[in-house]
Image (tube, rainbow, N blue to C red; front, side, top):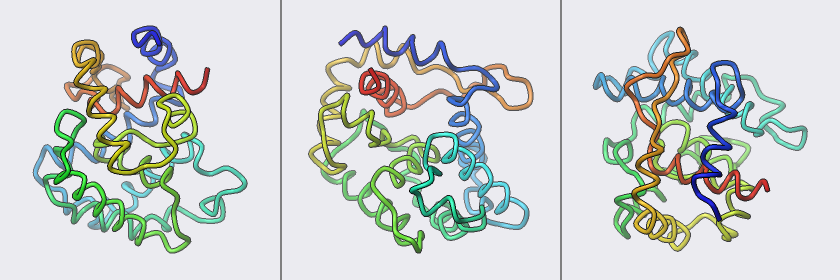
Length: 211
C-alpha cells in the first residue's frame, strides 16, 4: 500500500464545495466550542439547531442517509439527544487521538459510543457511531465498509483500535506530515485547526478500501 498516494488521492478531491469538506465544516463547528471552553453551549438556544444541522449534513454527505437508513425518515431534530451527549462529554474524549490509544482510553471510547448509541432511539450501527465520533471529536476513524475493507478488520472494538495505534506508531512521520488544516466555511481558506491522526488514518484506508 502506498500511504502517501492514498492521501494525495483523498486530498485532491477536497475543496470548499466538495463532499469531503463536509467533515471540515462539522469538525470546525464542534472544535471551535472546545477551543473556546464552551462545549456545553453546543446544545443551548440556537446552537442546538446549528449543531444538529452540521452533524446531520455531514452524515448525509458521508452516506448515512441512504434509502435503507432509518435516518432518512428523520429530521435534524432527531439529533438533539446526540448533541446533548456531545455537550456533556468529558474533556478527555475531546483530546483523544491515535497516538494515545490504551486499554484505559478504550474504556472512554466505548463509554462515549454507548452513550451516543443510547441517544439514537432507532438504534445505531458501529458505522454511524464512529462517523459521529470522527466528525465531532476526531478521536477514531470511521469504521465504514471502505475503512474496514482497506484496514482488514470486520468490527469496531478494542483490538481493532489497538491495531490503529500500532499502524500510527509504524507510520507516524508520514501521518503527522499529512495532518492538513481544515478549510473554513466562509472563506474556503485553511484554518489553524488540523486534522487529527485518526482522521488521516481514516483517509488512508477509506481510499484503500474503495480501490
